[in-house]
Length: 71
Image (cartoon, rainbow, N blue to C red; front, side):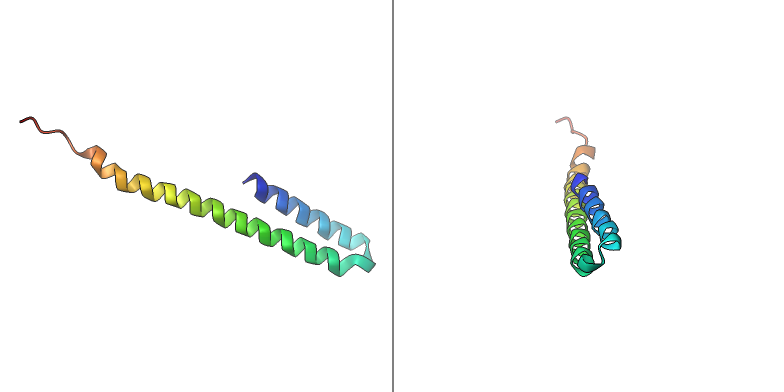
């Protein structure tokens, strides 16, 4: 999640610089879009990893509910 914050901060800085540098406007806006894309990829990877862990826990939970039977 820290990478997502960094990418979004860099995108914001690029957009701010684009406002003050009209000759480099398109290049900076392109960089901002690229950083936003990287943030989306990192965020998707984070949530995919969280969902995989959650699914593994859901499979193991019913086994934990079984009670041992005395013979």
